[in-house]
Amino acid sequence: MAIEAWFKEIIKDGVSQRLKSNGGLLDGTMKSGEQVAGFVKFPISGGRIKMYKLSGAIEEVRPQGLDVDVVALQADDYTAEATIRNQDTLRQTPSYQAEVSDAMSKSVRVKRDGIKFDALNAFCNIGNANIPGGGPTTPVTFGDGSARIDMLYAMTACAQIRGAGGDGECYWAMPFMWFDQLEMYKEFASKDYQGDKELPFARSALVNKKTFRGVHFLALPDEHFTYGTAAWVEGQSEWDDTKYLDSFLWTKNAVGCETFWSKEQMDMNEWIGKAGKPILCDTALSGAAIGLLPEGVKRIRAKAIKDIVRV
Image 1 (cartoon, rainbow, N blue to C red):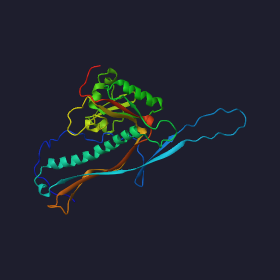
Image 2: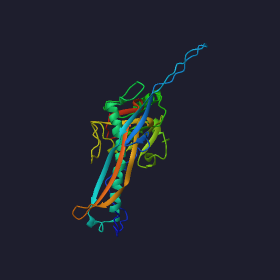
Image 3: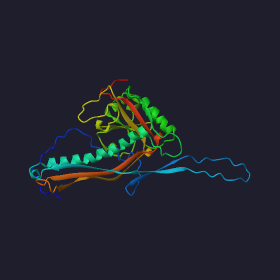
Image 4: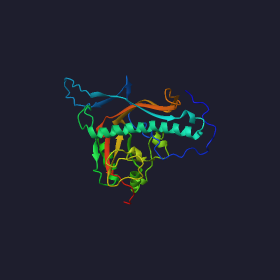
């Protein structure tokens, strides 16, 4: 139901909120699948069709085939709720309503990013045994977490992906501290972002991005990095540099992600049966993500730095 005439007062500058990620920054960076009856399906092919030399005589044909499979994944459903006292709806400022709505929308967008990172982490840990065509089933991990991030990680990862035949868009999400450490290398500092300007992270002025050797480097807020011994926790102000972080580099076709629905605009309804009939606000999300091609995904494990040093 609509909650009418919420506010009378106008607060010029709105609510001062604790700094958090707006989320939704990885939208468009992974392959979409086909939605079928609550499942999302991603086709994968392996093998190669090879030419052979004709002898000049009449001979039997030598038919070949590709190994094609479909990975099916059931979507998971998520929700978030917030309550507002019905008695407060005529007392609160317009900026409070806007803040509740914004916080609910952010919860959806941040979870969309989290689904993608969770899939990358699971892929690097357990692989995907359903991949046809032979070859590796688990992505390569670079580093043991004891060293600072440097350009050698990027160059090695790029060389392996391109050497395997990967020619699609590549993305490497990392903390701002790592990104700024790489800025100490002149090869990286001189680069500009050259990818799709319409992607959410590319439109965001708060995301640093560059393109180096065909890989789009993007710096995301710390709260997105929850893997490794230095995994981010709510309220931390800096990284523990005695521990390490895991980040991920992937090609667009190597990871699949599909969102069945993503309701950022919250619903507001009186909560019948509760004292005073409080206003219940809720949002919803349904989606799934999975690693598809191990040769197109790399895990980079490096020290969780809290300062920048010159190289």
